[in-house]
Image (cartoon, rainbow, N blue to C red):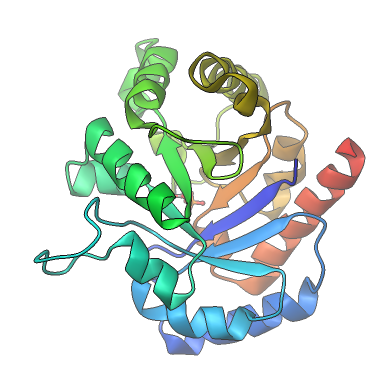
Length: 252
Ligand code: PGA
């Protein structure tokens, strides 16, 4: 399994930020892992041009469940693909919170992504209140059960475990806490997907940075990272890619 370092630029990145892509490709011309950036929709096409012929893949941050039509302000999986995307993040906690996205909607969006040939990165994770009240595995289990589309395979599905309270806060779960949830997700994928489950990448996300990446990448069933803030600067994201490449080499 090829590990995956994915960056989520969220609502950041004007065209001037494409210089970070140039710097990233100079620093990581041939990483030993997969490398993906998901910029705002406005930057997908120019970033895909900048990444052409390189190891960098480009993805979207959301898509609509319908293939086309009267949905002002939305973007379809086909339009993402046409712009040069190969992946799409779905069910990020910010979309679940800001836009009321349910598991069923995330599953419908993921089905549209798969039908278009995009790889779906489905995000799950508990709030702080849910962790404090001992509900973490219940919440993550429910999200996995409800958000996975039919027809998912190791090749077109990635799961990202992102505790809501760790996103953008500088706080991370302990290593045993990360290990517990990732092993749990692997088991649930096994129940849902059978033989495909061992090959599905399970990313950890939430305050991943150069200083904690190597330790997190040493955890069983952590197959990469979904990185927000630290993906905006090439120097930081490159260091995370380097840590994941080292983990890939160690696992080979
Ligand atoms: P962060 O965000 O790395 O800035 O905590 C992670 C994410 O939301 O994917």
